[in-house]
Length: 448
Image (tube, one colour):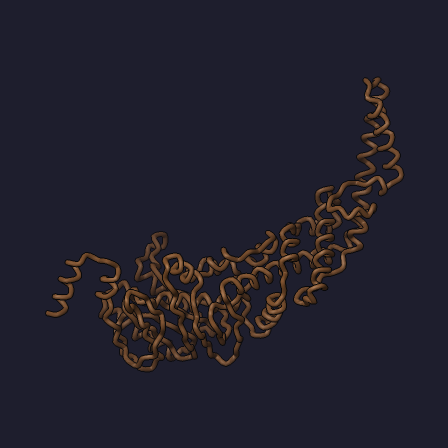
């Protein structure tokens, strides 16, 4: 799954992308096209690079990267020896100059996360006058014949008088000769540069990756994110996990996010609590942080141990599909069934199911959830379910969300052996300022 695809998962990953200050369009493109890492070695290697950048002041490099353009198509043409025009030759020269300048900064910072190829030969080819100016045109010094033609043209222009027909014909011939010589020079330059096409592509790719790493390191400092410890023991643990998107939203309202600590093993996990009790935020945060770890971002927790998976499946919200002709309930159970089929096939999935069977009647809904828990005990996998039904299954790890206390939503998870869901609906309704007469009538019905 590419990072671009992951942005569709409703867990807060879009917020992380939007707050990431990537300087170059090629860096942003590389991130969107990046694949989710699924092995410990790949993830550890990536975080090794990110740690190197994290400890350095890379602001000067970031300013340089702001000017990098995505010239992949130009480099493909160069690799195929297709004659480059002046704009494309400028793009190549500019990339070579920026690469050399960034390489100097990397050496000053003793930063080894990225290695850049030497492109001084490219600069020399495209800057024969050694002006060190990031611009390009066909210089006179490329050809004595071209220099002479341009000299003659300038001489005619200096005269500044009406030209005779004979002079006009001479100018036309000189202009054509100038164009022919410039084309020959472009052909020659393209052939001279072609052997460096792969190095230029390597430089562009590594500068793009460096841009991403610097942006992620900056985001880690700004949002107080941490480096994950990647495990292979089928155990995931978060200490004071949070969701930056929800935290920012609450901060805008003058409220605090209550962090969550949770451990996940192979056994199914259920998180129980009343509606609006914070269960969805917890499950979205689990999805978010698993994705952050496997796409090489800082993780939103004080510390964490994360076991990689092949896919993060988050079934949450209304699965209704008008185009497919299915109801909310049908769409939901079809989505869960698709995840179950993948787990049965042996795919390693983190399956996060929010309020399964919420849209059907409570009796059948409770039975469906208990039945699902019985199935996933047998097929194994990593399953976390939230529910407000009273579940009787004892062979699961069970947490209860603390919920609403003194008008503040507390997402803290408390281990519990009971399947009874807290009765907090009235308290939540009161906190929302619901019609007082409605509340009073409801309380009287409960008391009777």
